Structures are given as structure tokens and as C-alpha cells.
Amino acid sequence: MNFEDANIVFLNDEKNNYKECIISYKTAYINIFNILVLEAQDPTEAVKKKETKVEGEEEDLFVIYRHESFQLWESEVQGAMLQANHNFIIVNKEGMGVVALGARQKQIFNDDKGNERMLHSLES
Image (cartoon, rainbow, N blue to C red):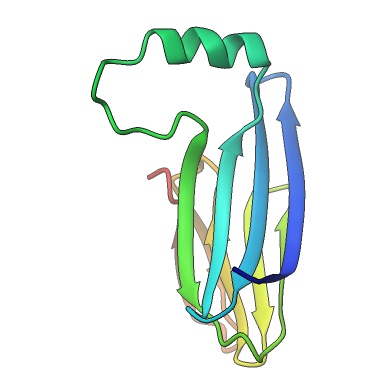
């Protein structure tokens, strides 16, 4: 499978004790833009987690969130992480989209016409 317009960002928050890797890319033939939020943990912790996994449980140990959206392969797309509020920005020829990856339940902001909007995080 072909991949393009890839982006990788690492988040490390010592205060809240988490490490994450955010990977975004588009794929050929199925026209999807993917955002994966993965645990970026110590390999020894991963082994401990795998050992405590229940038999027959079909769970990916490292994927926290997965977001997919339509994106033509022929069209350019870029993704960027805003570190301050953990929002992931997607920019393509259609405009801009925002995916809230942080733990903040809701964020209130005003659009270009002054209307109040609310953004809910994936975690909420």
C-alpha cells in the first residue's frame, strides 16, 4: 500500500505521566487520511502489559485513538499538532479540520462570523 503526506509528532508530558506518538498519513486506492495516537512507552512496560492481557482478547496494546477521514489520493493534505491544546489540524483544498486529541472535555471558540462553537475531544 502507498502512503504519502505523512507526519509524526511525539508528546511527552512528565507531569501527567504520558508519552504518545501521533502519526498521520494518507493512503492510496482507499482515499483515507489516518491519524493514529499510539502509546510511546518503555518496552519493559509493554511486555508487562502484554503478559496481563486476557486470552482471546483482540485489543491492540499500543493504539489509543484512531481517526479516519476521506481524502483523495490526488489531493495534497497536511496535518500538524498544536502542542498547547493537543488539537490536530488537517489542512487540504477543502479547508481546515480540527480533531481534539487531548483530555479536555470541551473547548469553546468563535468562528469567523463571531458564532460561538464547541469542540469536544475524542477522549470525552
